[in-house]
Picture 1: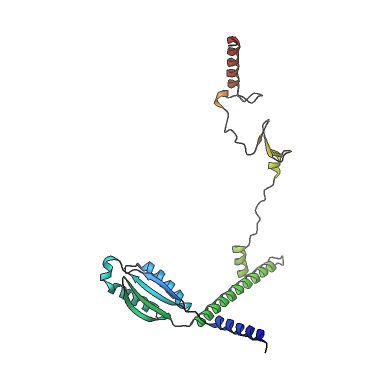
Picture 2 (picture 1 turned 90 degrees about the vertical axis):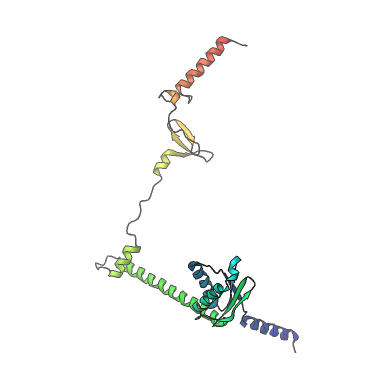
Length: 246
């Protein structure tokens, strides 16, 4: 007898048994006695989802302060929830007081394996429907291409409706780079520079919004300074020459 082969077969059987077994999972949902209708609907939706997946749900009602003297509020809320999900689960553990909380356990009507099989079947069905929709869209596109050929016949109404909703007959106007080529030049170092008058400035350099108020409405001189500023600098230099060295 080959002992290695025996160990391998035993391991394979154990793996298959673990794969087929169902682990019981208990989900918990907590509520308050004064819960609003919208919050109650949200909590109930989670309970329905857990029961459809084959899991048990433990409902806990939390009491605070003077609410502990009114346990009937929590009991009524649990009965209401059990009545709302009676088509998916049954009350496995009746409501009982546990300190400040009141608990109840709801078990699913279907087994875990059956729930998994149903979920898998729903996924396969949804994938089949989606594939059928894609195939129908391809058939409509193919019929549209055939009808768009100049054969002199008018397309069917379904194809005309599809063409008006999804097909573009005109293409948007494409922009050219001829204008930017006239304004921008690439320097030897790879920078983008543009010409503005007789000055070359970098594209990332902040440009002045308008003419300076000191130039009196005249443009800059050859050195790039306004006329008024140049005159003020000349007067300061003449005064320094007349004063002489200190």
